[in-house]
Length: 492
Image (cartoon, rainbow, N blue to C red; front, side):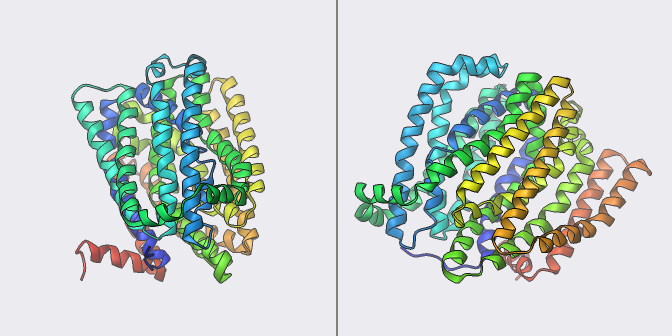
């Protein structure tokens, strides 16, 4: 089995290229989809995703993370087998949950419309569970281009079928649910087919029950700590949608879902790719080269430099963006996005870094952190929900999110050997870089009375200026951008 040899930057570029196309298609389709589907439909689809997300994250009992760690591919292949075995077990459990507790779930979520789609939960759990170990196997073998292709295929299938159904008059929450599952199915087949084509001999000759059991025991910390940690983390991520449905309505959930999706979109475009490559690079640095702190510092710096300006910008112009892009009925979602901005930024910079729990084998600390995160978020939602003010509720959620993810990020950085003050300096530095452009936009909006479309155009120009400045100062960012433009013929 051959492993491509590439730099960190070029590997990130491969994943970002796929993410750019996938997310870009989603960006182009979003204004049309938002006009075809009502907020209530988005709310139902979000509640479905909350259920499948909570179950699906533990579909492999987190053994998919262990695939990255062994020195030999033979041991890693058996961990792939362990992961797939547990997918079948968890899928079966999800069938029982829906069969016996479906009505209870629907009543708690205050969404009768959701009931007719609950049978799809085990399907989504199974497909998503299969894709998890396949993704990590590709990261281990450094075939990041495959992951890029899979993301593009998933997005193309999901968005085109969604638009086709919408124009045909099928605009229920079930359409949003079904098209998302369809995209995942196709991308999983694409990924699985490529892996089987290249590595089937390795799997056939090495995957054995006794070796799988040995791997299961060797990496038992993953199900003991990481499973509960991931479950708590995902539950805390999905809790706002669930509690907003309980205290308010699916329509409010729809506003929240679209606002958070748009806010997270630029972050997911880069953050997911960085996390995938960082986990592989950090595992290698910790077990072989011993330069973990250097790897962490490089990744943290780039996460901050790439993430801070778009988040602050969306926090500033959220309502304007939604009125222009999605129509006046979605203006409230833009306000929600402005409230949640800083929370998403700290989540963005800490999520790739959180793979250090696995690299440093400190999963028990991850479990403790996610317990605190869930408790504080639940408390925020309960207190806010009892007031009956959804904006105040989201402000409390964002505040606890900033506190928890900020602490997590700096604690992990210190454990990796990087001084916290250097990380703080990095945030301050790029905040200062962002300030002149943000102040100019704010003055144009509030003092000069610039209309929404003018604010958006000025914001796009500011994005270009900011990223040009950042990229020209960073050799490692300049290289992949040069490769990107060469790949598509913009430069020779």
